[in-house]
Image (cartoon, rainbow, N blue to C red):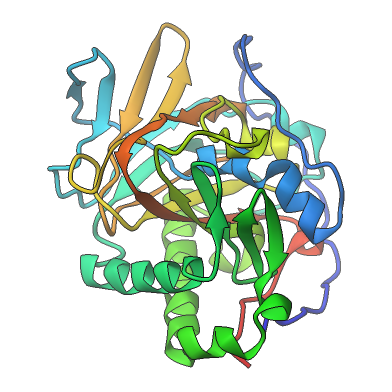
Length: 316
């Protein structure tokens, strides 16, 4: 089902200033993939990136009951909010790509790109896929590209493991919706960061996540550790999250938290809410443990390096 793509040639690199050195962080658990094979790649790191499922913002913010700054509350309906932060030097440690490598860094959130109805349709896609399996712990992953699906304490390739049964629960329209929303998200990221949409590429891992309050059974269920996407996966340049369920209605906890010097700030999930951010250490973050209920989201990741691009999943 997942199609292979043809790798394009590299774009010439670019050098330039990217802002001050990031502040020294402590207590960060660095999660790195342990292998280049699809199974170990996901097992070794994909649940760490589950904590990167979102970006945050600001402009109009307030304090939550626990004293944390709220950048986007669940009860709000947001057109577009953006908070610019200085770019870290992480991007200098990788090949730079003209017109794509972040020069403007920050965090954004909008409720105006994906409708609640579209998010509900995508939630049904996630629920259908997870009906085939799921983790024994609190975090499950479904990757339509590679076919990776949490199963107990491990992962299986659902396309090989379940075969034609996948075609009985996922339709061609489901995959088309996935592609359409991915393109819309890509365009919004490009507009916000002043880059050409054709200069960024979908990259792995891109996946649905399901989180609940079940006790972690393996280290890969521990989605709540602080981390940096560009450190975990060097190919990441822009990370986005589309929420498929509501904070305080469908689950408690599970907020996305930016960790900044002297203060933390949070985004409260809402079905149809899109959050995205540059992937470097300017956006150190974590996800709170889910207290009750089930949190659904989809992480869609983008790279400037065409050698790390992946194609859209297909139904055939």
